[in-house]
Amino acid sequence: MLDIEADESSDGVNSWTGANRMKVRSLIVIALAALAIASLIYAARAVGGFSTRAEPTRVERLVARLARRWAVPARARQARNPVPFTPDTWAESREHFADHCATCHANDGSGRTSIGRNLYPKAPDMRLAATQDLTDGELYYIIVNGVRLSGMPAWGSGGDDDVDSWKCVHFIRHLGDLTPEHLKEMESLNPKSPAERQEEQDDERFLQGGDVEPSGAPAPHHVHKENP
Ligand code: HEC
Image 1 (cartoon, rainbow, N blue to C red):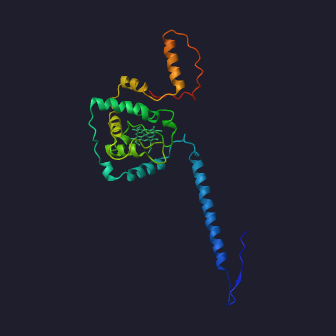
Image 2: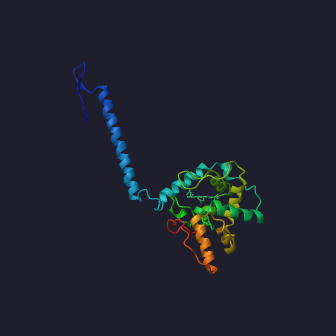
Image 3: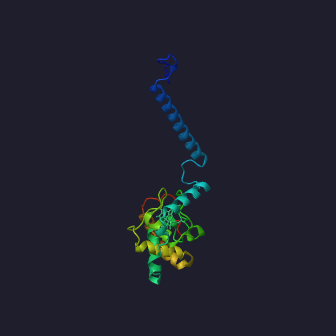
């Protein structure tokens, strides 16, 4: 409880002591902080609580995108891809993407995987203008630095010349050139759990007319295999 004592000053007028004034100020600060926290919790609940299943609101998307844009230094934005695009680069970039990136981004860059779709923010559909309008330098900077407060990790050795990351930039630019054969080949390179590998082998044996014994491998957590 607040204990405000009147203080008899030398001229006989009631005034608060300095200590009491400090107490009242502290109480006001604490009350305002509590109000701010309560408002934040209320706002968070109003926009879907803390669940990452929710879609980020337009305001969140705009603020996050602007903050990311401003965070990329102008020099990095203007950087040119030092790795020439050759048939070998194209093949290596597909392999690299299938192994490291497709878990969230999907082999076709659509972001349609169970992880990519349930992150907050979601893994974007990189075939769309929002990604394609970024410069090569911005794409590279995002790949080697990651994006804070999102599921996007930093890759490679950092710096300006991480060859695999520059190859990923080529891959993102050529998403429209992926053929069904490329996608099939990439699928075989996607990281898989032992249970998924076993399931694949079982399917293969079944198709060849063999008996399929139950593998005894742990059941996967729902069907997580959504890469095309
Ligand atoms: C664990 C999940 C995950 C993995 C793995 C991952 N990313 Fe991402 N990535 C994300 C998320 C989430 C975003 C969205 C970040 C944002 O909204 O700012 C993102 C954004 C990006 C962007 C920016 C596109 C845009 O329009 O916002 C690029 C480029 C990118 N990732 C490339 C890659 C590459 C290349 C790899 C592999 C080397 C990779 N990512 C691996 C989750 C992932």
